Image 1 (cartoon, rainbow, N blue to C red):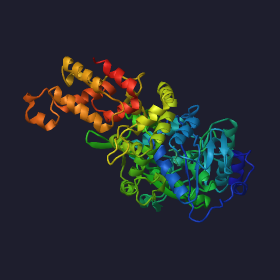
Image 2: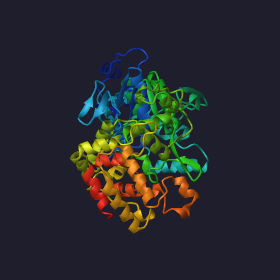
Image 3: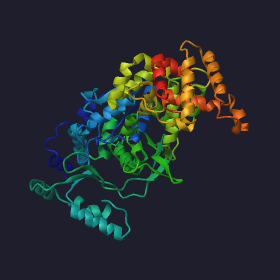
Image 4: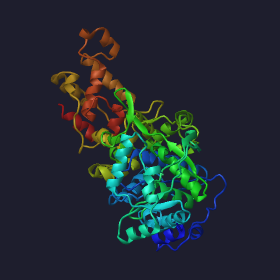
Length: 545
Ligand code: GLU
C-alpha cells in the first residue's frame, strides 16, 4: 500500500508538516542543568493529594535549578471533564503556594508553547499521526466495540495478554486502501493504532527515582488517536513533553506499565526521552496494614480536605517534604527557622515504597509550623482562611484586631512555647474564649469543688483582685486565698494527705481557668486576664457568684 495516499485519505485537512511544528516551538534558552518540569492533571474536578505531591517535586526540581515549571491541562478524556475543573485546580495549587512560570491560567494561556490544553492541540497531534501513517507506522482500525469485546473474551479464555497485536491486529492491518476509503465515506468510526512489532526484546529505562528498569519492549498496536481524532494520553504526552521541552516527567507509578509504549513513541519519532520519575503511590495504615488511599473511603485524598480543615499550606508542604525526602526532618531540626524552600530537595533520596499519609503526623507538623510563626503571620493566614471558610469568625477577628493579636502572642515566648493551634479550623474553636460572642463554658467547674466553695472563692478573688498586679503579686494573692479556704498550696501536700484538705491549688486555678476561658486546660491565667481586660475578667467571674 502507498502509505502517502493512506495519510491523505485519513488526514486530508492536515497541511502542516512536522518541520512546521518544530519551528513553532523552538528550543528553550536556559542555562545548562536547568530542569523543565510540569504537572499534567486531568480536569476531573477532583484534585488529589497526589497532584500536589508530584507538583512539589516538579516545582522544586525546576526552581532549584533555575528552570521552568508549567501547567498543562490533560483534557483528552472529555467523558471525565467537569465544568470549572481547571479553575478549581489552579485555585487549589495557588492555595498551596505552587507557582507556575508558564501554562494554563484561569485567564487563558501564558507562554510561547501554547496552547497548554490538549484538546486545543488536536491538529498538532494529527500532524504527527499523519507523519506516522506516511512512515507505515500507524493505521486506521475499524473494530467495533462488540468485536473488541469478543477478542478480549477469547484472550481471557486462552490466558493470553489482552490487547490488539499479532493475529488480533491482522484484520485491520490487512485492509486495502479501497476498503478503508469505503468505510470512511460510509462514516464508520475508526481509531488510529500504532503498528507494534512482535518482539521478545527488552528495553532499559533509567528512572530517576527507581533506577534502572528493564521491561519487555512494546508489542501492542495501541491507540494513538481516538475516534474523535483526540489523542490518547500516551501519544499526547510524548508530543507535548517533546515540544514543550520537558526535561523531567514526574508522574505516579501507575504509569510504569505503559512506559514501553512511551519509549517506543519517542524512538520512532526520533526524539530524546525526558528523564522519567515515577513516584510512589500514597498509602495509609488501615488496621495494621498499608493500603492505597481511596477516593471513596479517605477524605484526606482530596486536596480540598486540607483547605476545608484549614491546614496551612506550609504544614502541608513540610509534611509532603518529609514523605519525599527521608532527611527533611533532620534538616528541619538543624534549620528550625529556615524557609522550607531552602531545603535541598533531590530525586535520589526519594523513597519508592508507598508514601504513608499519616494525619496525626501532619497535625503534629502543623502545630510546630504555626508555633514557629509570629503572631502577625498567624493572624493574617488564619484570617485569610476564615474569610473563605468561616465568615462569622473573620468578622470577629476584624472586630477585635488588637485583642486577637495579643491573644495570639500568649504563650509564644520562652523555651517551651505553647502549641495550642493545629489548624485554622481548630483555631476558631480554640480561640473562641477570647470573644464574648463565642465564649462558652465547656468544662464543669463542679469537678473542682462544691457550689458554695466556688462562690466563696470567687468572692474573695474579686475582693482582692487588682488588675495592676504583676504576675507574682497576683499569684501571692491566689496562694493566700487557697490556704484560707483550706486547699493545699502545694499539690504534693494534698497528694500525701487528701483528707487534710478541701483540694489543692490546682482546683483553685482550674476554677479560674474555667471561669475565664471555659476550660481547665488553657494558657496562663494572668496573661489571659491581661488580654481580656479587667471588665471582661470581672464579668466572667461574677457569673459564678
Ligand atoms: N494526565 C495524567 C494524570 O492525570 C498526568 C500524568 C503525567 O503527568 O504525565 O495522571
